[in-house]
Image 1 (cartoon, helix red, strand yellow):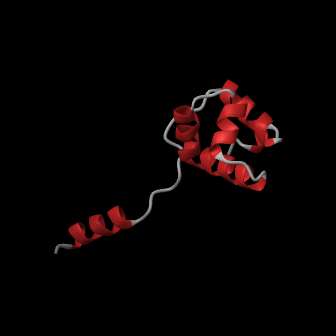
Image 2 (tube, one colour; image 1 turned 45 degrees about the vertical axis):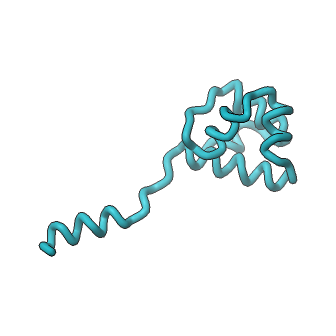
Amino acid sequence: MHDRDLQQAREAARPSPLTPAERLGMRIVAKRLDANLTQEKVFLAAGISRNTYQRIESGKGDARFSHLLRIATVLGCHVRDLIP
């Protein structure tokens, strides 16, 4: 294996930094667990779909501000506590 190929293999194996959406999702999960709530309780109380909530929590989708406001209200925190 050439040095260049080895370097590329090392870079590919290195975990990539989290995206802002992933960090947002991690904060929501932490707040939800602190509040001892299930995903179902949060998305139902927030009035958003299961799929939308799961995408936000997993960091795979961009969250609308209105969704973040509703989620923060259910979690008993301010929306600024969720934003990375």
